[in-house]
Length: 528
Image (cartoon, rainbow, N blue to C red; front, side, top):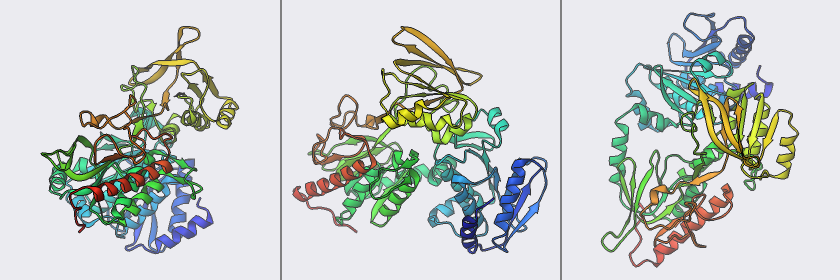
């Protein structure tokens, strides 16, 4: 099952096992069960501290599946499916943490996990090609390994198609808690704990409001915000960064091949590198927070104030806005109703759930054409719908797309409605603008790939000027219309929304903010 190089690497990791562990296998004679048995035997062969217990197709257990626990204990980590691909790291961490190897998590977070009251039974549905799923699986596994009142099972959707269909799961990762829907999409450990530990948000808001003012406060932690915080901190001044998550939209990007000097990487890897780099500097990082209102400094109020959705308020002498952008939606009937029920935005994550089915991709730019090419290798048929008369994607992508036998390209088409039946997508209606008639396409999934919208709605009434697209207007220094407020990245008027450009703009905004502070009449704050 495992290649020799991977087994050798696994053997090195398994030398860190603290206590003996056992793999309790629930298997039958199916092909998938034989693959799982082979995987478990490979794992057990690399360490004398691992043993396999054959439990057979036990009642109440998904087959094939296996449980990881310390010998003689009943800890709560299970894998229903083969944790390979993106999930192999989840398997390695689960083995180590179940044995007692400490997780690289702050002590306060571990105490918060131990304080959870159960029973809490999590089920996470994933696909092995989903780059968002491992964070969720690893977070839930850590919680289960730390608190005996918590159990978690990872379920590979492609292997348990009948259950996926019955529970109408059409997007991953999707998590259930005690049988009820808990959440979907990427979730960090902190986000999961915030939802389970209902008092955490209030405690965090109070702690944030009590913070001293910053010289530079960065709002948003994508490539632009991360770069801005590092550049500001390097100047030795009090710097804070507040955001929902580190990495921003990069976390939802799979392949990155145009980040100069790095031939190829993945979004989550780059986001992790950004977070690690920020941690090298005395930046006050405040995650799981969304900005609600900016009140600029005035004669009465000498500091800028950022009010957060949590109710907390932060103060700063300068602010750098780097809130990025989000997927643009179609805004047609049926889109919201069938979101995660056939309407999707990430072909890499959700594509495997549509194996053998008919789907549409709306959008003829690079992202849309790339999505159609990827999906064509999984689904029965792809209909690509583009509003313009011609596709806008690069010529090489268009040539590849048109070479595929199971793809239909429709141009000059205006998407009008997404239809559904039995709680999930059943079709799409578009207007053939040349013929002046509506066309109905029966299908099971719609992937929306029509660009981005800047996350700037919250700036209404702040005095920060925006263009008709909602982008923040900035000058060559990254300065906005409000003195002391700067902006960078995809939320601004700077053309070409690229990671490397956003990083440069974030760095420039931080240098401009520092220059502004030097020239301001009031002295800068002293860094601790």
